[in-house]
Image (tube, rainbow, N blue to C red; front, side):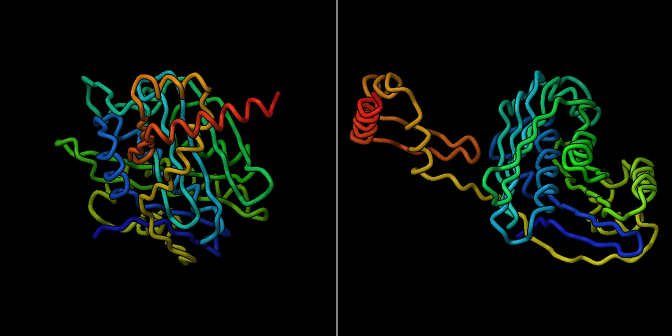
Length: 301
């Protein structure tokens, strides 16, 4: 069985914390589940890696989670990935069938998502989740996440995300690295690391494609300086949907919609957008929802 991981790393000499994510197998699984064409596969895999890296910044083994969404005017329309501190991840892409007639390797994330917004929702177990919505700037996913972390969370960050496909249009590499400073870290250090990352931008995908450890790349970026892996969390596809959750969503439908379902089909079928599992509601269950809806309406008047 193949496994992906997120790593939490510390380099004392540079006073830098790093997070790394290997996401090849979970990206393949989710792309197969949603039937993505090659351009959509690359966009989806990059978003999966970005969400995994953000989840690595959460408190390990806690109930904290993060939701990452890119929505825009491009052909993918919306890509939404959720990940938690225990390594569970799920996601969907609104339009998995993106047509293409050019070299897939040259297609940019910017061209696939178009003009739009980045939404990040972090649930840290506080009274309300933290939410940030920012207009897309460059369209490069690594730059968008780095900008969000630097200016919204006030943590200067450098990030690289890699996804590669072979001539057969199979995903052969997927992963990424996030570097962050501490409050007393010399800002020149992160600037130097950003420069090294840009110089070696294409190398991470090649290294991962050869099956080498992502930590080999980190060692190069850190100039050979020692670092330690503080925590490793297996990453896995795990949707938390349930019939009760879908029922709660249906309870938000207007009365006319529920009555229309009952009249036309005598039942309802709802599919989870994340894992595509179908949930069935009988005519009796629809009747019950309608009765509850009418009762709530009477009580509210």
